[in-house]
Image (cartoon, rainbow, N blue to C red; front, side, top):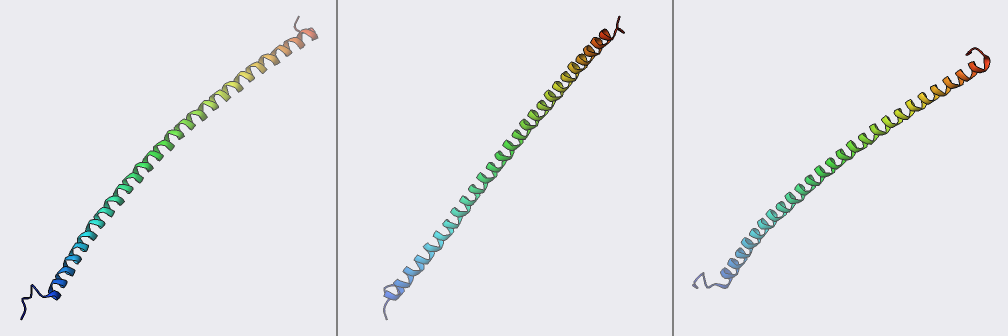
Length: 104
């Protein structure tokens, strides 16, 4: 009988087993690599989402500030116009009294 270590079939089976082990190792490495990439992409997506939310919050604050400022300016203009209208109507009233002779 031949030495089993020198048998071509035994050598071929050993070669296949070595390939299987190498492929399994490669699959494990690939799985870890994919998991690492997924984790990196997830972290990047979370960071981007946080930045977008912060930007939107800042814009919202800016828009609120602009809205409040515009409202205050609008009220100031309305108050100014009412004061001017009051003075104008008061002036007209004084003029009419003057014309009617009651003011004398």
